[in-house]
Image (cartoon, rainbow, N blue to C red; front, top):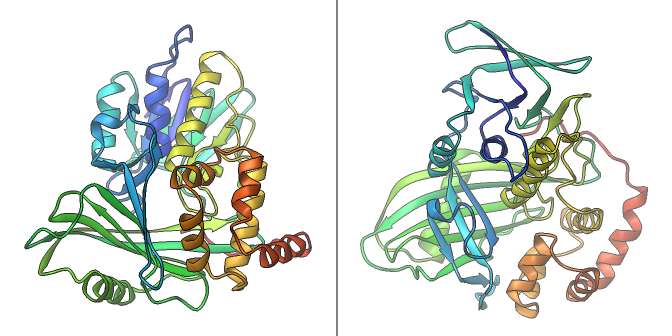
Length: 396
């Protein structure tokens, strides 16, 4: 199978699908492009259905396929302190990958879709060649002008600090109404603290009897299946006190939280996008909103005939602040549960969400920083320049 195309997108996760969606409908005045999207065949290289969360104003381009959205958020401190507030004009949004994939497929009839395991992306003098193997064992060769690789990196870049955000969640259905569909529980710190980092529960109610309930840790290593089972049983039973419930589906994942520098260029005509291109916010693990900014910029550059190098997903100032927070958490210098509880208690939730998405001005950043443990943070700032960057191994 040999194809000639202009654009090759490797991987059909959030970043690959988002870029295909934008290239199928170029901005006014921009030229249409010939696009080929290569996804892994069904099997271990194709992830199961997953959930993406982000915040933005109502009327977003994916609102019609959202699973749910909320105008109010709640955070609970380790001692049970309840902090709840509105985030107007923002909404916290939940999007499942299945409906998102169907939306993209409906809006991209002109995008060629192929299934193959990509083994090599080769730079040519003015273009690329992509080699792969189809599910039937056939060979695939694609020749194009530009390639965008959205697959997870095989290894993390050298970093001063790396934590893993790892989680396991259950979609539950209770025997009687117990959830408030108007409020999303963003962080519930009434969970056992790991030796390094922090842990919290996460509840996204879909109705009075249905919700996604997750247990999350920021720590250096993941748990085994039994560990996640114990944590979720404790959280749903001992903390939430849920009555009899059925688990209708489950999900889990591992998100690297690293101050490493993720290269966005892998060759003269090859770029990395999404988490592989640094779209994950190191301090939170959120990725989807940054993917939209990144792919929007790439699509505009391609439509205007410019070099489509993806821009940084987060500002240098945001990455510097994230590096400080990660080191403070990993060193134990700062109690993560206490820090986040204090921030949500003392900073308006809407402003804090904008801060976490890199949408605040420097004056707002400084003001928010004053609500953190200042002396431990300053000590961490002084320490960071002297720390070596080390390779931590394969990415999950």
